[in-house]
Each structure stands twice: as C-alpha cells, then as structure tokens.
Image 1 (tube, rainbow, N blue to C red):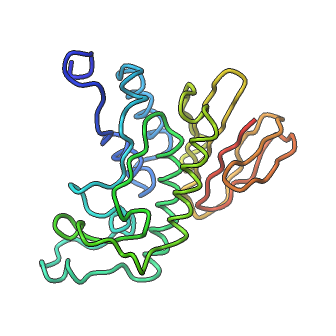
Image 2: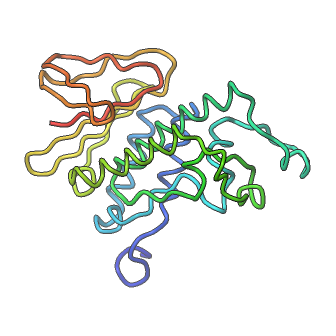
Length: 232
C-alpha cells in the first residue's frame, strides 16, 4: 500500500542491495537472485521501480568494501576503528564491488552512491562508516569505474528507460536484458573464479564496459569475476 500513490513515490531500494549481496557473497544462486528481482518487478508499480534508489552503501550500513571483503564480526570498538582489510581480501572486495556497481547502474532505478564508496573507503557500522573523505588517498580504479558507468547511463537511454527481464545462465552467472525500441542490452555478471560460457544468440555486440566488438557467435566466454554489458 505504501507504493500505490497515496504515501510514497519510491523507496530506497534495500531489497536490491540485499539480493545482490547475497548473490555476490555466494549466499544465493543466480537463479535465486533472478527470481527475487522478478518478484520485485511484479510487485512494484513501474514508476516506483524505475524511480527507486539503487543503493549499495549508506550511513545505516557498514562500508560496502568492508562487507564485500567479509571483515570479521565480534571486534571491540577500538578494533573496529583500526581495522583494514588485508590486501588479498581488499582486492577481492574491489572486484566484487565493481560487479555490484555494474548491477547498480544497469538495473531499473536510480544509482545512489554513498560518499567515499567510489574512493574505496572502508569501515564498520556507524560511526566507523562516516569517516572524512580521503582526498589524498582515493582508489582511482573505483573512481574511474563509477565515472564510466555514470557516462554509460547518460549516453544509452536503454539503461534508464528500457524494459527488464532477469535470467540465469547457471548458478554463478546472472543476466539482465534491457530493451528500448530498437536498442538491446544484454548484461552478464559472473561471480565465480572460473570462466563461463554465455549465449549471445548469433548477434554482433559491443561491450560497453571495454569497447570490445564481438562477431556473431552462439556463445561468449565470460572471464572469472567479470561482467559484460553487450549493446546492439
């Protein structure tokens, strides 16, 4: 009832965040993720779904890198204040975050970036997620990634207005299809450490993330922990 026009126009899209994290952290399969997102699509009015704030980090949650790096629970206040992800876990968290941001920017809704997530800030829950912006120590790879995804949303209306269909190639690869008039986008996200083949339906595609052009083929090999945003 909240979303039927008399109370709320849209909402902070925590259900998206929950389901995307469950998938990327291996707590659910791509089939589970697709079914959950389809249930949201069926139950949200279109205006609400397309106006929802697609968030991954907020002042009410631990920093998204800390979550994706699977930082330990049960630390003291001082330990939380001092904790930083070990290099290997941080690298994993950054790779996961880039996949999560692909989902965030290509799903129906409005991407909402919590300050510092694009700079690589870490931190447990409040107050450790509210540190000052690291002006002299930003993660430029994340900053450029978010800038590029923002540009794609501006340049390709299909990523903003297009219809949506969810799918799963196997338990590790989640997919979305966006369509707007003659524009088609096929998004694949592979969360696993192994390569997977995905169908590309004998069409030529441009990968908006890399600029690579793929000739017509039955399948495309998707690298470990990677995503493609295929446009035609």
